[in-house]
Structures are given as C-alpha cells and as structure tokens.
Image (cartoon, rainbow, N blue to C red):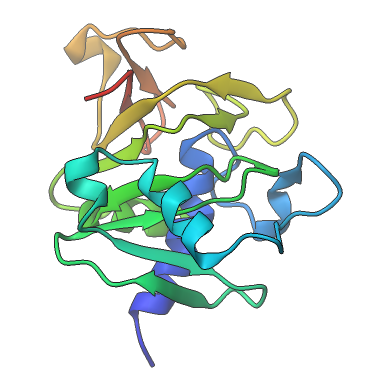
Length: 195
C-alpha cells in the first residue's frame, strides 16, 4: 500500500481547515458555493495552473501537483522535484483553496485530519495560499457554521505559536501576521500578503 496516498488524502481534508474549514471533518464538511462540489469541466492544465497560483513562482514551477479524484484517490497531475506539493483545490467549495506546502506542513495537516492530539512534524512547515481562500474562523478550528470569510493572499508557518510568548495578535488582520487557532495545539502563524 502506498503510504503517500493516505497521507495526502488526510492532508487535503486537513488543509481545508487551515483556511477556515473544519479540520478534522470529513469531505462532506465542505460547503459548496454552488450546486456542484466539483468542476467537471476543469482540464488538467487548468488544475495545474490553479495549483501553481498558490505558491511563489520559484516554488510552484518545480513542485509536484496533485489532485483528488471523486473516490478520494490521489491523482498526480505533474511530478516535481523540490519537496513541495501544490493542489488546485476547488473554487466552488468553501475551505478548499489552491495551496502549496512542504512535507512538514503536509504532516501537520495529516495529523489534524486524523484527529491527533497535536501535530507531529518535528520542524516548521510552510503552506502558501497566494491565490487567496475562504474560511470559517480564525479562532475555532472546528467551526462549521459561521459565514465564509474571504481571505486574500497569505502564507502560514505550521508550528506551535503562543501569543503570550510571541506578542502576536490572535485576530484576523488584512495585513501583517497573527496567530490562527490560538490556544489549540494546532495554532499556527498566518501571514497576510506575499512572502
């Protein structure tokens, strides 16, 4: 059995929450923006372009690009060689933006999706969402009902951050940095704008 497939499936679900969906939820926790939760008309090239829009050009151009099929299986759209994986997301689903992330960030997301008490990555992870996103909450990783929040280009460091020791704010900001999901084991640094 290929362990990368289960990890990527967990990552995809988990990273949906990083942007405000409810991590730890199942795929049906996604809220469609329109009737269809998928865009069947997307070509492979359109998905690759959307996935690449999430990361800095120098990272996205050499990243592995993956998607998930209707059965939840990982589909490799393009191989990469720099340790980053980019995903096209689904623009019709709240909390499923395009993103690019490194292996530590993927581990963070897989742990969240598996409901582990805390992330197990041993180094900080990096997630890019430079095409923007929609999310539910900056304070509650389990929020599934709040109205969607549009978030501009941003990137995150997936590592424990404590507002008491860092002095960083815990509320959403249009610019600068803040700690998302403060007080939970999955608190992380959310940085608005381009890196």
